[in-house]
Picture 1: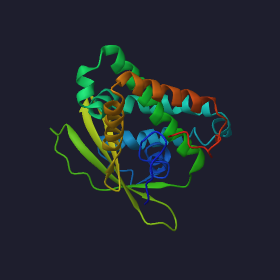
Picture 2: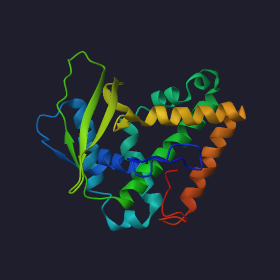
Picture 3: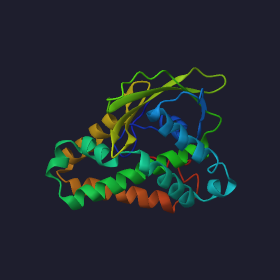
Picture 4: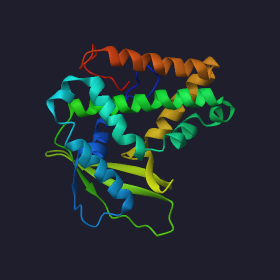
Length: 225
């Protein structure tokens, strides 16, 4: 799998993040016997599988992103994700900056997942055995993404039990961490410009531009950049 640099200074996840669509609507293998963290992913997959394939969502990107946002929001620990991504900059950020960053990064992910839905289909997900104890508060849900004619792709979810529910806070594709990838890019951006506000503004501008573009966009639909 090849990765290139995007114009944002992020590693391009156009191909890799398309596989994250499995989190939403891929068909689960061996659904019976899934443990609670696996069920969170599988239930979200079922909900989006029955809705996102409808024509009106392929035609209306904004409507599709609203649907995706509503389904994934309860199952992703965006507070933890934002804190881990910004690292030392999170500690010195104001409450307003934290909320703005969380909002814009969440939209970045939602756009990416929604774009993946419009461009890829026919993925299946196979859950690998999950060894966990009743007292465990963190687990890694290991899966394989399957498509006819292709080798399985490892997609693993780091999850934490918080507020009486299991939530995703990182995704690893073939061992590459989404969280670490963005952390490296974003902290480099802040270090270079000396401004967390500038990073947040840049994110907001890209999100706004992407939402105004027609489906497919001028660059072939790369709304996740």
